[in-house]
Length: 564
Image (cartoon, rainbow, N blue to C red; front, side):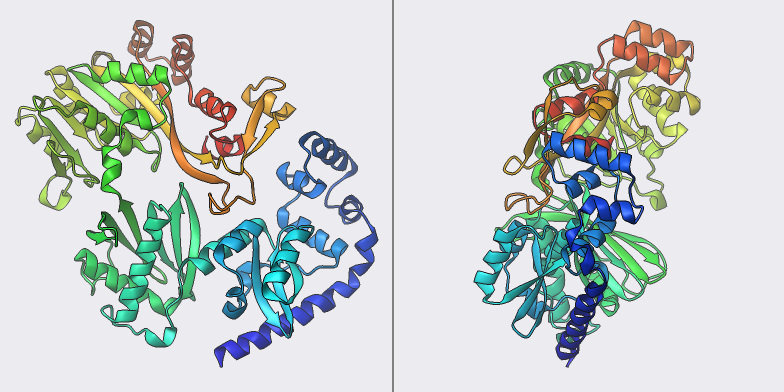
């Protein structure tokens, strides 16, 4: 009955879409620029700019306009709808017919960037971004044996639908109940977790809204919607996850944290860190996926340039002092610290850590975890660690003055201390330490190295496109005229799942304090002055590192803009 009513609604929608086009069909003989000009969406100057850039980049008019930010993609598709006489649909509010969807497999949908939306008689309505892709239309007609009605949709919405609609086969609602131990709930949760691991996701977000439950994966640092369930599924799914994590099922008013292990059919075991948070429409649950093998990664696999890697090796070879890793949340600081500890972990060295929480277990290292209820704070743990005869101490985060003061004391008394600090770049770490009341002399006496880092997505090498940098990029980012860079293919390919990117690597800004810099710190000069001096002392900035990766084809300028 539900499917029948959906079919009727979709058919009615199709008729409405077609009927709405009769008023705009007159625009079919006009160029896109004419329509945009008539509707005062863009002006003559912008049209000329688009035409020039289109010729230079060998892109089409509309693609260039969107790329330059002159027109929004939705506005463009609405105008294209008028010119081509094709319906435009906002997929955010569209209920896709799963029977129609089943007529195309996931790989074909990714390859063609097309999604079957609904059927009507012998017609199959398919969402496209590019209506001029006649080969794709012919391929679908051949596979389905049906007449194809092109529906205009945005690229991002098509990609999200492909990811969400094909990722997991939805368990029949009639088979599900509110029991967290029911087979249907267990099966669905298992599928969500397995698919996340297979997709190489770092996090799973289960977020309820007023009427829906959105399941999202963070892949290569970007959240992507995987599936949308009825809101009624919120409680049983969360309850199942709480059972797995040894959390209190009855407690829904307070945040909770837990962990569990999950075994794949291959036998590989993954750790999951679970966090629940009460919201207006129910508990939001976030799971961090911890692959034990990633805790054993070596420094030379992280993306360091040869110069930075050599300097980092030299810095961590010190027997005393403080080594700081900085950057925003999710920038890979913990991975850098773990890789560093792997290198320093030798039979004759006593290494202790205090973390929040312990992400990866490391053989030969005594790892402790913050437990504020039990009085196990960073500062309290650090104070106790100094009585454990350590050679190397790793503190998960310098959060407060007490922790920093103890770290400085530890460094002055013959220990090497590794820690993280939440600052945007290397030089601002000094002002942060000074603002927290640390004496300049103590800073210059203990800090051996500061590294700032970000994680940047790598372009898929199977579908990337090469181009020449434009005038804006030369002026803004210091590229030279005629230099070649790569950009991601917005349509993607089978190897990257239609995203245009595959995997991530780090970019690093490493500051090794010189006598000049230490003197400036003692004189409490500004961050900018210290930064200017650091660059004179041959510090490679994050911008320069990112530019290097763009020139060698590892990443794109658009990705650099997003990250930096």
